[in-house]
Image (cartoon, rainbow over all chains, first blue to last red; front, side, top):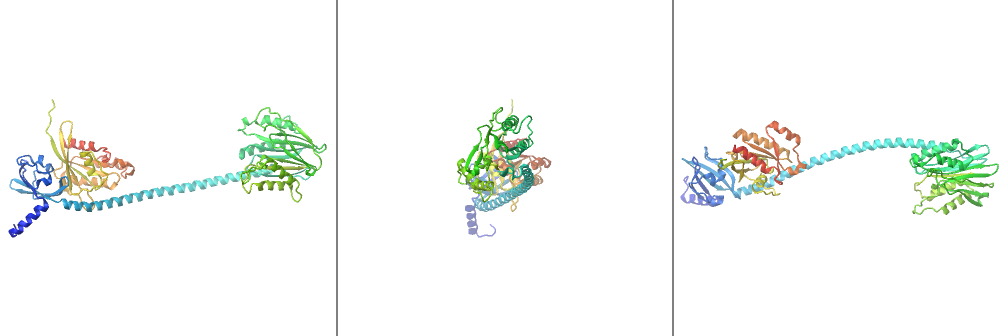
Length: 403
Length: 170
């Protein structure tokens, strides 16, 4: 054996045989039959191989390989039995083909461990790269969405600014419809604030004829554009006395006619309260009628006595043919008359407690007695102050007449 | 009276990049099991399974060949004597489809045209797929069509092997 001493050859042979689990098949590959078999066949699941039998039925892993023209031929690392891998060495010897199986299970296991780590690392890196790409795609989508949002917000802001400008112009127009304060022969002053840009409160006063002075305050339900449009419409009707066949010196008739015309069923469920009076300076008689409106307050003789001028009745527009009963009062000299919308006394304090009507009357009494500043300004500031700086919840209108 | 033909025994190879699921497909086909644990293959693992076709039974000798990677190219000697092969790609990893198509060319260059099926595996992870519908639509231009398979659910596995068995038994 290649000039090796017999003993060395024997040692080598024993070492290889022990370590490599050597087994062999001698095959007649012309007839595909086993000629002989030996060695550690059980290591490869070949213990049942019998000479003379078909080789492919006993060693199915050789399917397709035989006959083998070129030898020597080696197929490395073939797991021929579960958990056992071998290098398959094919050698021709005359008419027979020798297959020698050398166990490489240990080497395969070692390679598998290293390869496993390497593949797992590679797969993790691929996953990481994939995740990064997805994150980047999601980020890009977010950036695009952010750009869209910004663009939408700018468009909304432009629309908001335009609407705000239009509302401001509308509010300015509504204020222009309100009368200027008067000094004589009847003094009139007022304060007016809306809880939104446009409100449903409106009021006015004017001479119907040289002897009759009309004074009124109305409050359309709700706030905003629709309430405001309706209040402006009613204000125009009252200012221009444009109800057919109605004597505007007769408060009862005015309210009944308005009720016939402004039915909420035809007007998107909008209705309104109204206090309407007509004062005749010659007779010092004040005729008035209320439609669901808070009573007016008459302070007689410099505030010594206070009377509430109201009548129980429904707001205008709620019920067809509702009846409105007019009343009248003689107005002594040095009297003051206050008209309000309900926002003037339906006030919630910062503590959450509502202002009582009695407390409101006390506020009016206090303001009416003010001498150092305008009673209307004093009352308005006092009531707004009760809100503690909070925004108004309702429109507030206060009109004062001095007779 | 139909004459029963003798049992055939044929070698087929599982080919594809590493980690595409070749071993899992074989286990699903042969043992009807699936394991979430990834175990790499070194060299080649050999298994067999009998498949009953309409006119005969065929024993498939399955050579589960270690996946190709950047360091270790496919050992073409493993394919010697194969009657057909299963090309496997991982739908969640686009490059594995390129590897599969490249392997097909190399097999044909070395051993001529053989019957094969192309499996796009891991169809159960469809939401993670990188292989697009457009890519699949373009495959016929390259002379093949892909089937979807999942070793986890078994989708498309049995049918793919049966169709390949039928093709190589003709």
